[in-house]
Image 1 (spheres, protein in one colour):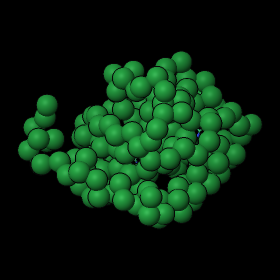
Image 2 (cartoon, protein in one colour; image 1 turned 120 degrees about the horizontal axis):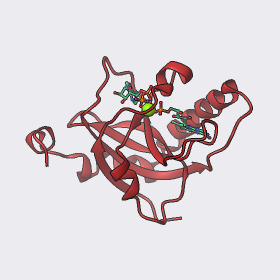
Image 3 (cartoon, protein in one colour; image 1 turned 45 degrees about the vertical axis):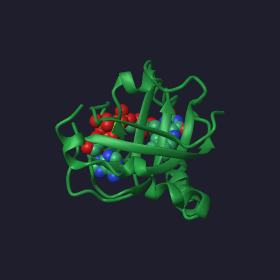
Image 4 (cartoon, helix red, strand yellow; image 1 turned 135 degrees about the horizontal axis):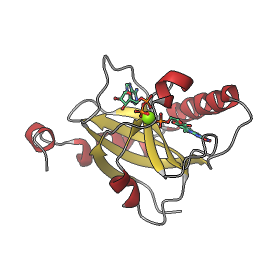
Length: 155
Ligand SMILES: Cc1cc2nc3c(=O)[nH]c(=O)nc-3n(C[C@H](O)[C@H](O)[C@H](O)COP(=O)(O)O)c2cc1C
Ligand SMILES: Nc1ncnc2c1ncn2[C@@H]1O[C@H](COP(=O)(O)OP(=O)(O)O)[C@@H](O)[C@H]1O
Ligand SMILES: [Mg+2]
């Protein structure tokens, strides 16, 4: 496993629309290119860390990297659930993430309910761990100090 933290940003794209509708847990999906550029030593699995949208506030997050065995995806995805209630969707905006810790490997489940409760467990565990000083410090990292014009008008 790579030495964390791992920082990355990219545009939020559409996935299969399952996160909100089937699970009640929306996940902001990164484009294929961002997923393909993950270092080989960032293994698939469920991680936690910090995230912000554009130049917005930094929130706790959980992120899933892999093939979603429950849904048997054929393409690897990287999906971030931000632990915050947003007023509206933010497709097309830049999502900034700092992955600071690993929770567990991806698993298959025998029901949707079991998948949902596993994810809810991940969220509770992430909330606790992110309060530890060793993780809390990354909330203030320079990575998140992005000037507005740089990220809104792009690249
Ligand atoms: C914290 C977290 C843990 C997850 N764990 C698993 C898992 O163990 N197995 C799995 O098949 N999918 C897992 N998922 C992925 C969900 O299946 C996925 O978010 C859902 O299919 C939504 O996909 P969509 O963005 O394409 O709509 C996890 C997602 C999150 C946010
Ligand atoms: N707390 C949140 N965390 C992640 N995405 C959120 C959140 N609140 C709203 N969203 C929006 O919901 C979208 C993800 O919903 P989801 O059902 O997973 O659809 P998709 O399959 O298109 O990724 C995100 O792209 C974002 O615009
Ligand atoms: Mg999603």
